Each structure stands twice: as structure tokens, then as C-alpha cells.
Image (cartoon, rainbow, N blue to C red):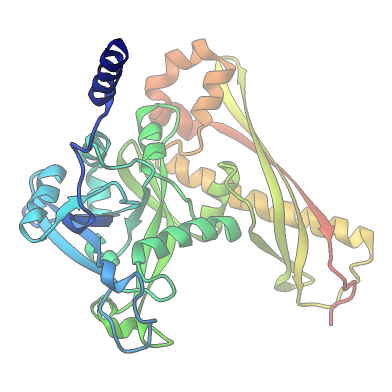
Length: 398
């Protein structure tokens, strides 16, 4: 009897501890939102574009070019006075419950970014499903809706293609930044640094890009491409930078993994190509007479990737001269980037954090005026060490 009573009590306790499935949702009741696009309407409302997966056209679908199967994603739009209102109103057009736990990309229009993103980040950070690990890009020259509407080759879901482009472009080229919402919010929240985001543009006709035929051709009518870096001051976009200037930004931020430099030689432009294999950037602050200054030291190693002129690469003195030319080129990129940020009075490099570490008491005095007064006049010294470790198997080009 006692054993039966003890067993009954144990089973009752187990039942009370079991959470059950009170919050369960059937997969057939969910619409998975993979990406969100945010624009502003002429009336000043938010325009939310939700990229929702069509499961039957992704898993087990006929391969692209087969002429069968539907589009892998659908775009649902709605408007509202707030981001939350716009996203909830979209349920009037969707037959399933919108599910944001798998949202991994947010595209914001340039117009909205210039107005400010505080309200956007507030709504996303408070949402119980949304993950701040989602990547963030700025639509440049087109609306966020147009960017998400383009059907892409290789990756069926355009949001995934953009995410992969961010990852591998930063890895191999070094003129774009693979940044998520959490890091952006952190940069805005502190006074020592402002965020930098990558731009996304459409190459071709956006109207044709949303049609199925766009991915059934070897030369699509519209492509998505990464396009420059957006510099922010607090939560507002203030300027775009491109090319070597963008690469200079990434040098200082220590986000360069691999990139390619070309330098002139013997009167020929872009004669020698150099590919970095590893790099490191050291940023230090110094205080003299109550005024801060910054020193940047960049160390990089790499190999010669191309030679368009006949030179003897077995000559060590020539390699030394090439290294000096590469150092000059890298320093020029970094200098351009610093001047661009100083003109806009936005410290996107985190120099303020270096000053804070070097002189906490001084930082408390200048913190509020850092971006507008001290950073634009900041004395920055740049030094570079570029090392050629390999010339591959050919000492003499063809």
C-alpha cells in the first residue's frame, strides 16, 4: 500500500513538472518570414515587405531552368504608423501565422536610414521571436521592397544569397562589412563608435528581376550586388564610401581577411597585384597636453597574385621596393577613409574607445563633444608594414 501511494505521489509530481505543449504551433499553420524590408511611404508611414518562403517550391522543387515549379518566395507588404503595426497588419493578406524566429536579414531603404533607425531597432529588439543576429543592409538607389523582390540564381532564396555575399565578400575582397543588428545597436548605444553598414543595389531592371524568367537565363535581367559602405552618425546615415576608401575603413576596423592591392611599376598603372593572406591592425591613443591623438599600425602578409610587366622577382632588393609601394598604397586608402569620416564628424573606427582606455578621466570630459569637436580635428598617424611572403613558382613573368 505504501509503495503504491509513493508511486502515485511520484507520478503526480512528474505530471506537475511537465511543461506540456501549451505553446505548440503546427508547421502548416506558420508562414516563415526569412527577410524584412522597410521603406517609408509618401504619407510618412512604414512600408514593411515580408519575404515568406513557399515551402513546396524550395524543398524538393524542380531545378532551376526546368520550366516547372513556382517561385520560392512571396512578398507581402503592409503599412503602419509603426514597425509593429505594419508587420501585424500583414496578417490580413497571409493565410498563416507570421513567424519571425527564422528571419535572418533586414533590408532598410536609404531614405529611412537617413531619417533614423531608432524606432526600427526598438521594435526589433522587443519582439519575442525576432533574433538580433539577423544581418542588416541598406538598399542603395532602390527600395527595400525592390531588393527583396528580385529572384536570384544559385541560391533560390534571395535573402540567403545576400547573406552569403556579405560573408564571402568580406572574406575575399574587403570592401563590405558583414554586420548584424545586435552589433549595430551596440555601436549606437555607446558614444565611442558609430556603425558602418553595407549597401545593396540592383544591377539591371528591377521589374524584370521579380519574374521567374530572371533565373531561367544564363544572363539574368536583374542581379543583386553589394555596393559600398554606409557611414552612420548615431542612428542616421550620413555618407556613402566606395572602393579604396571603403577598404581603408575595413583596414582600420581590422576586418580585412583577404583583399587585393595593385600598384604601379615603371610607368604602368596597376602593374603588380598583391593578395593579402593575413593582417592585423593596432590602434593606440596617446595624450599630450590634454589633447588625444591616435596611431594606427597595420601589418599584413601576402603573396604576389599577378605581374603584368617583366620583372625579376628573384631580386630581393626589387621585392623590398615593391613592399614599400604596397605600404604607400595601403596607407593612402586608410588616410582617405579617416578624412571621409572626419568630414562627416562620425567616429566609425572606435577611436573614442581607444581614448577611453588610455585616459578614462579625460574621456569623461570630452565624451559629449567627441564626434562634433574632437574627432574632426584628431591627429591620426598611420604606419604600414606589408610583407611579400611568396611569389609562387614563377620568378620571371611571361
